[in-house]
Length: 100
Image 1: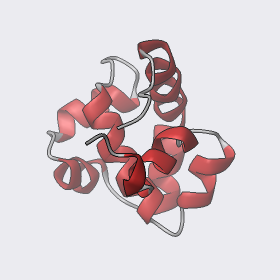
Image 2: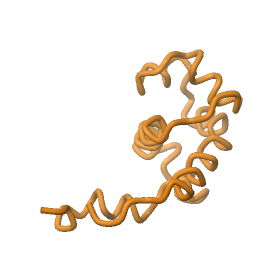
Image 3: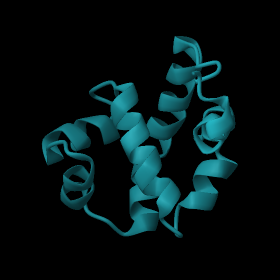
């Protein structure tokens, strides 16, 4: 699927999302429990991510990105804060670039 993001780029996006987690969750008006259930992790794990006591994995980042990108209350915020990697989104939305 074309070029993928480097580990350094992934870390940059993860850090941006981590820094905004509490604010995004408040804007979405969702509990830690409900959000954790949506993405398939425990509330305790989510709490550790939000308080920056546990590093976020790329798969958790993608899950949270999907949730917040699909919510009217938060989709514009993740774009303004450059939490959403446009290069990756273009690749995902352009099936012509998928390797044969």
